Length: 382
Image (cartoon, rainbow, N blue to C red; front, top):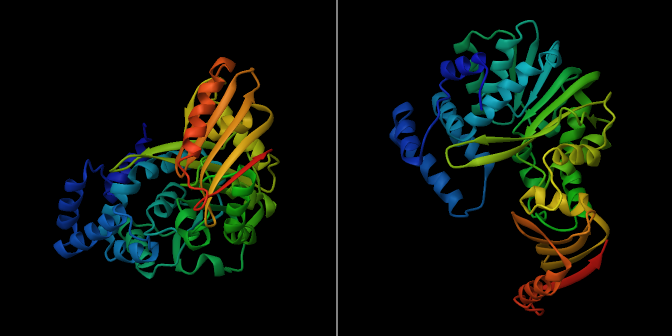
């Protein structure tokens, strides 16, 4: 990714430097802050990596113990997406005039960047974490930003009594809706699954609608992607009368200290008319090629977008969760399709009729791995 010069200069000024690996991260964090802070953060991150329950509120309290520490952690885990967001802000300068509301702003890195870029506009950053708001105010003072204010508030109880020309949510939805999305299925029949995410996101979308001017714009960059959640997020906005601009919406990838992460970019407003499903299809079809095997969100997209006639589903359920899903379908080109999804792993294969027996044998062998006394196996067609 090539960032605009303004973005790179800002990142250097703030201290958002690329960090190559975990050892460099811990050593640099100890140098920027203190040894105890670095040890506490290392323990927190290692616990998450080992599968401990995620407590985002605790993480952000720890992260924002100091401004320098918060910035350094952001550099490691969000520096790549911040650069993308910086580019996006510059490319859409016409949307940032007047009053701008930045939800879940954390320590204010992006809010201050936007305020720097558009000195004639006024920016309001909201975050529930007191340490984050304290750090955001300190960062604004350090940078000489005078057209931004920061308010500590629960976004779900927000009532600022005014409307904004633009409302932004940059990498916020995952943390804000953590409790509302716990236990939701990663796999399963897409319309049903995404409807549960829509319901989980509705309160957040309603806050946006409440504060959005009639001609205002909404811009969000989120960790929920085509694999699950993005369609539900767009459906939540649409239910609040905020529809999509499919031409501007896109998928984004950004590098952090450990790997490359996927993000969804959503542009919406009351003036737009594209539906959530049309938007999803528009974005993913730009790189889609029928007959090609896919992994991840594109695999599920292929199943629904490229199938003709009924899809034959088999869901493996344990308790209230769908832990595995298989599907067979005919593609529009006449080839057969075999879909296999478990948790965050999805893949689809295209094959000719002569391979039907082999694919069915593979499917039957996998189904036999599940004890029917412990798992519920449901077959249906849609």
